[in-house]
Length: 298
Image (cartoon, rainbow, N blue to C red; front, side):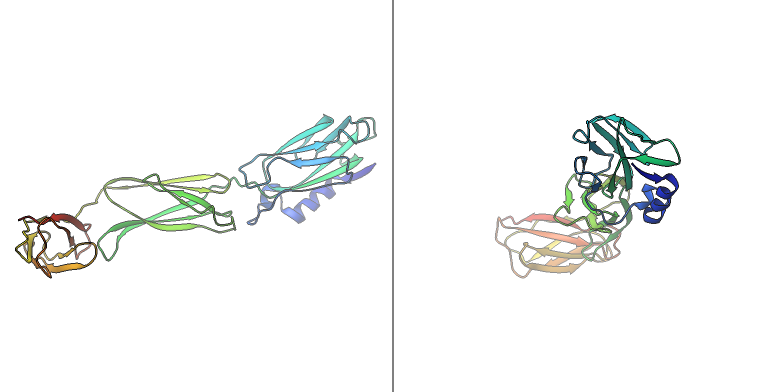
């Protein structure tokens, strides 16, 4: 018969893991570790990967002595009689389990625990902490397009991020190392709600939403362009930068006057039926660049 004092167990627990199993929450995680003083007592854990928990520890003592035993967890304050005992664990930490034949002189009630055999399980794979998500202010890039900045972080790593359009940025090809976050810029295309959902490897999720109500594009009107002219005329914001391209090369650039009128010379007249694009950039970065498709007519 082996005895362990409750006070001694508590001291070992504090030295190794802090004041409670929750405080043993480590940045790195490993699969559960089990050990037993008798090979006939089988100890298993149902979840070996990262999980929100709980995990179930099963103690199978059906082949230990006559198979009718009493299992006890001091940490969980739970006693189970029978050949199989299951304990639900919700926090990371080290857990001690006592196993004794039902006819033996065991004692699980006093300050000193008397038991025939002891099993130990170390759990570090429970993660019920949600990721952090921060949405920064919006900004305009050099081309006049507007974006919102998002930053996410998680002790066990970000698995994926759901963007406002329902698409995901997936990071499952990366290992779940501690401190791995994810950040990026998402393009704003209209007024409305923009919702981001960050999910870690255990399935914990955090949702953040920002409402955009001041989105506007540069006003732009392009007058008829024929295959006989090298000029494109139209109206846009005063002092705006105007350009034309066919997705391969820039065909021309211009600057609108104080009233927003512009006349842009192309490198050459475009063929009737061809298509090119005219864009207008707000130099004050208050409105988003506008691009219109132009078809050359006779």
